[in-house]
Structures are given as C-alpha cells and as structure tokens.
Length: 115
Image (cartoon, helix red, strand yellow):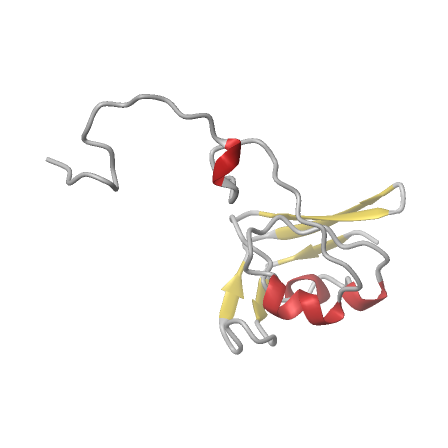
C-alpha cells in the first residue's frame, strides 16, 4: 500500500488530545512487506492516529517502529505487546551514558550564562 497525504490530522490519544498536527506532505512507501512513512517535517509520532491517517492500523501490525524519544508511550503502550527501545548514534540520544566526555572551557550553554 502506497499513500500520499497532506499530513494533517487530529490527535485522539491521551497526549495532546484534540491537537491539530501537521506532518507536512507525507508518503507511505511499501516494499518487501514493510510500510515506511516519510514526513516532510520533523515529527514525533506520539499518537497512533499519525499512522491511522495514512491507512496503517498499528493494532493489527506485528511490528511497529517509531522514531520517538518517549512521547509515544502514553498512546502506544496500551496497544503494544512489548516495547523495545533502541538507542542509535547521534547528538540526540536519550541515554547520556552513550556520550564520551570531553573537556570544554566555559561558558558551556546551558550550564553557564552566555555573554
């Protein structure tokens, strides 16, 4: 199933219920038994409605993969059999132990005032 959407939806779950969301132009690419949603704007899918609006029903999928730090849990935990969190490389890890420490002279934002 391939789909094209304007990316607009209304959150229906517990986090931000009723909020208008604009993912920007969004496409679903289907290949090798997988569906991949690609959004124009950065977006953390905190509500299953983000997938449902694209014709993907998360409750009937064997595996759903989301790129989201923690925002997804309130809505997806009740429908998930299991949640496996993965920490990938990059500057945005939620696990501070993955960062190597380096010595940096002050000021260091946000620890020190700027200017």
